[in-house]
Image (cartoon, rainbow, N blue to C red; front, side, top):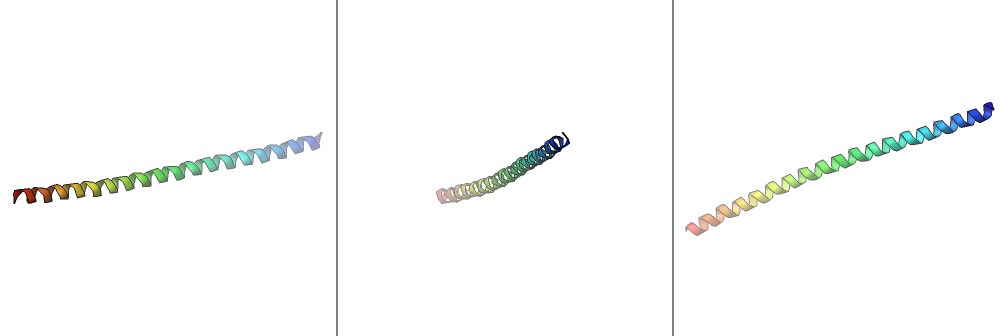
Length: 68
């Protein structure tokens, strides 16, 4: 009977370890995803600013060309 209890205890420890590793893996994936989303948002803001500057430069250049 003690051997069966021992085997059950070892099996439950192994399953608990696997479950813990699965939780850590999910947390790591969530953190990685969060960082990727943040990096993409920063890149979009940079590109948006560059595009807005280009449009404003064209408008300013276009106004001076029309005035002449």
